Image (cartoon, rainbow, N blue to C red):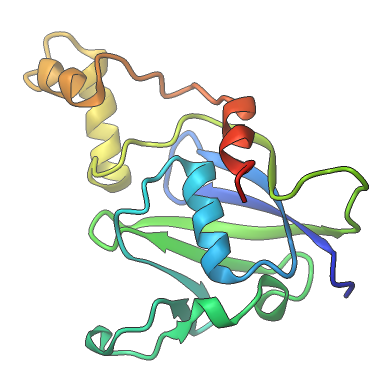
Length: 182
């Protein structure tokens, strides 16, 4: 594996129907704490909650003695060390209360393209659910409320979200702009 290998990863928000996903390309030498921040950007999260990566039976994140289980320090391990081959799958969980679980599938490991800036998103579908909406099931309830003007929570949800939300919206250019700082 070359130092500058690029991992093409499909990130799918588990249990979302229809699926919400992103296809990203990141360097294999990206540390997991950096990957966390990249995933925050591509999914539209705010980094306001705890998170973890689960690779097999090993947990990576920000270790804390109160967790009650061993968590390895994500800032000390690189992507290529934990998933060294194509077709490897692992989990990224964000917000333990809402439990946003993402399946990460290493689709390809490619040589870096000259002149291309990484990380980058090359494709995706659907808007990321709003932060703190209550997980996938809360998101379904939220969508139901904003679609139905007669729903008892319609006005409150629209006010909370800022008057409009399109669950089908996906803006690749804006997302890559957000990644340009990495």
